[in-house]
Image 1 (cartoon, helix red, strand yellow):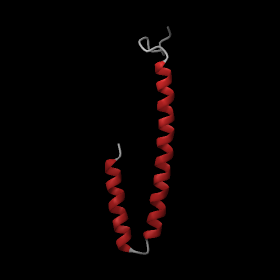
Image 2 (cartoon, one colour):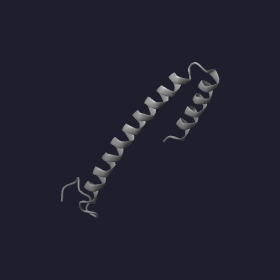
Image 3 (spheres, rainbow, N blue to C red):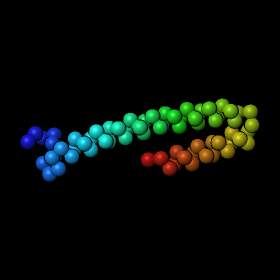
Image 4 (tube, rainbow, N blue to C red):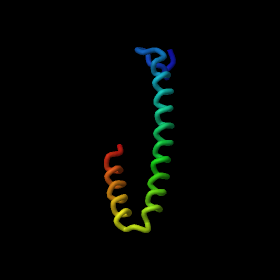
Length: 67
């Protein structure tokens, strides 16, 4: 048995690696979409200081909750 295979779970490790890779791709795409949305909201709120301040407060709270 090669060193890259789990001796306990046989091919489960390969399945798990594929699943984690898919989750990492999805996470990267979601983070990019979130960053784009943040930029669009900030740009839209620039004309109103209260909206911009509220958006910044929400964005900071969201960053604190991310791993």
